[in-house]
Length: 464
Image (cartoon, rainbow, N blue to C red; front, side, top):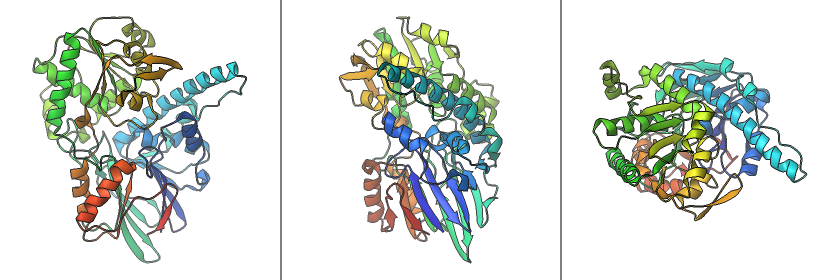
């Protein structure tokens, strides 16, 4: 049995791990790496293995850094099934198509500038047509039901509480009479977040734990504190006549923010201004959220059963057309705009930021982790001069970072998660984290006498 770390190893994006046993090759996640454009293109285009040799894929959830390179994998020869939960299957299909559209637009833009410099055109990583090949290979499996993706592998999905359909994966492995229980955490959610159930922690019979470490350096604040801070930032921005522009992941974060804004208006906590969700993907994702009540927590189920429109309210408009989106930037009245992408690297949010960034009345609200070298990270770090579409802008808008809204577990829950396997696990591998998050978590685990904890480098391998 061999496990190789080919993505989200000593970094956060591009989750991808290869499990080999009994002559089979099983891929855990196939995400897009996000960072410097040229480096990202190179990493995403070239797999460190022959895609034709992959027998099956197990997908923890639909976020693009976990699912976004599936069209490229299929384009390069994979024909095996992609196992995931039912909600993940629905979300992955729409996200793949949206990503294909973005890849095409980005390649067109890069080719335009290349022509000016006398350089060759750029091919997209994959197209929207390529992305349509993902859906036929998706094999939905309910939470708690065992399935066999490869010889000697019995897998089961457990709710990870991160986004709709997210799963941790129990993998019971057998090769040459050697048995191991591997638990892949995927992205671990938090307790007491709106809409979704709390994450399920691993059992005490786990031999090998492969787990995320994004926020291993600090515990999160109580979600209620973050809610109050978010409300206060929005209120003061609107009262001074500004816009609140929020880069937001279309799947998960947007729906949680809409839920929170709905609550704020229910409690008369905000001035009456229009709220816009400006992302075709977020609009489609919100419809999928409404369909998958099997993922709801009890509070959300009770709201829906009582007829409360949890993802709808009077001031809210879901924007689909590009013309409607452009019109928002021609207006000067106070409003709230949620738009994808969450790291502000593509999509309509980039245009909203371009028009909002130099007005000191406005606020850019950062509500999630931002990868290095992204526009979102540069704004979060409050760089005084920021490039957007090749133009340099002065950052005059207020920047508010609301850290407590993260859908990832903080240090306290990550420690609790790992300690569940303390008495049995031979090894704990920390992935999906930079040194800043993973190394403090390793120290915390060592303090709790978990000494076989590793932070594996990219493309390294271990025998299980």
